[in-house]
Length: 106
Image (cartoon, rainbow, N blue to C red; front, side, top):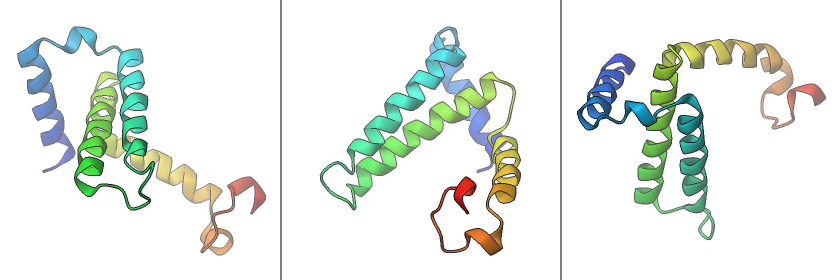
């Protein structure tokens, strides 16, 4: 399933429930942060996490990310590619390979 198909399914899901009225940029961003915290909680006491819970919470994070991207008129694919280009410049292979050092300290 591609980005457009997921977007269309989410749009239909939201429309059927008349939830778009609650999906302001601010509310969606808050929901991403809340769900990300719940994802992190999966690893609180078990470094490997609970696989089923991780999948569920990650799906929640991604769902809100897709909804926010749609809200601002961007596709997730477009956003990821734009950011990847910037990140490639910040972390050139020859200086970043095998290192977790922040770009300004490479």
